[in-house]
Length: 238
Image 1: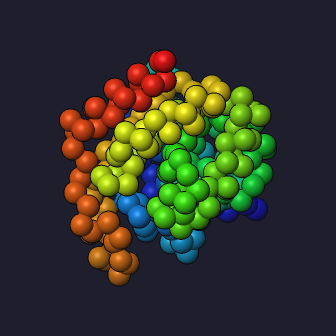
Image 2: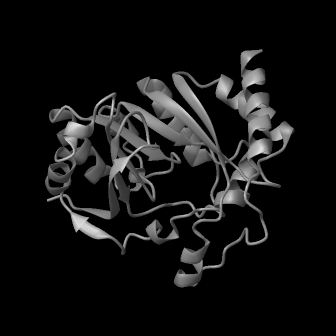
């Protein structure tokens, strides 16, 4: 029997894909992003153990709310870190006629071709545009992300691109122009979101006894973010 580990469950998410969505936060992540606001999802030991059948039974209870393209979004941690459990759960969701989305940094344990057969939409978090920047921010090479992106392109899955703007790290015009160049080469992009860096997860680090690497970084200014959004739009429209 396949078992998965779930960190938490949100019944009515509004920012995790189209429509009203049930969001399943899964345990386990290969990255250690400097600004991660869910460090309690990093290790597999935490969370609740559950079968795909038990989880889908919970999701189906909220199906009446899945209007306007709503459905289920698997987040984390990173759902790609539990591939066997994810595939089984996705299959059951598709059998139940539920729209499926994963919110991922594209860093997992392989099996992407099989996983993507049952996914309607990928919310893909681009951490950084260069390998060096990627390593500095996440502790891992960008190669893992590139492998998943390649699989998504082959599968033809729809994409929403997300990118966190961190003051002093990813907020320069030069960086945004490089990001535009990268996005231009990606197929099936339906939406691009620049997300402002925030410090909402800092208290969790204190409780877990983990050092917060961006302690002196201020939250992202909304006006500066809008300016960068305009720069990105203009560059992509050229």
